[in-house]
Image 1: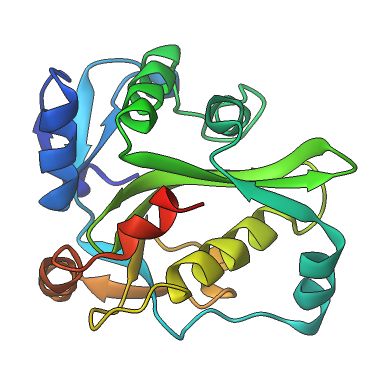
Image 2: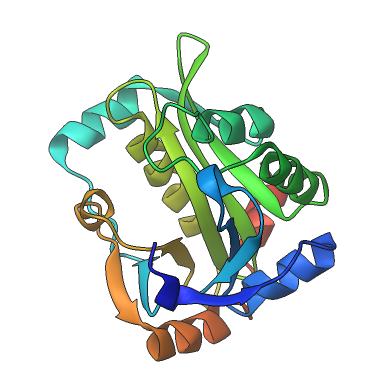
Length: 210
C-alpha cells in the first residue's frame, strides 16, 4: 500500500456513497493498524486488472476446478470473515468493513464466489459488481488452489452473459500471484478509460440469476 495511491480521507456515510466511489474508481481501506479508521479512499496509479479472455488456467488448476464444488452468494458474510482473518499477513478488513460489505450484499451490490470441499467452505472471493465491472476486494483459501478456483468460476459466470461490452475485473493492485493468473498492470488513465466503458455494460445481471 503506497500513500501516493491515496486520494481522500473521509468517513463512510452510506451505501450510495460507496457505490458512487467504486464507479469513480475508488475503494475504501482504513489507514490505521489492521485497517482501522480513518478511512482512506484509494485509486492506485498502477492498477491490477483482469480483462476478458486473459485468464491463465494451468493444467493443475484445471484439475482443481473439477475437484471442488462451488456456489454464488450462499454464505457471503462467511467469505468476508475468512478474508478478514487476523492471522493473514496485511489483514485490513475490520468488523466495520465486514458490516459495510454485508450491507452492500443485502442491497444487491456485493457478491461472493464460494468454493467447497465435502460441504466445507475452503476458499472464495468477494467484491462489488456494477455494469460490467467486478471490483474484487479479497480472496482466501484453506486448501491449495481454492481461491484460484473461485476466480475461474467468477470468470465463467461473467463469460456466460451475452453483451457487447467486455467485462473487467478490478484487482486493485497486481501481485505476483495474480500476475500468474493473467492479471495485468495498467496506468491510471488507461484504467479510467476501461472503467468508463465497462461500467456501461450489464454483466452484473449474472449475479441476479444464480
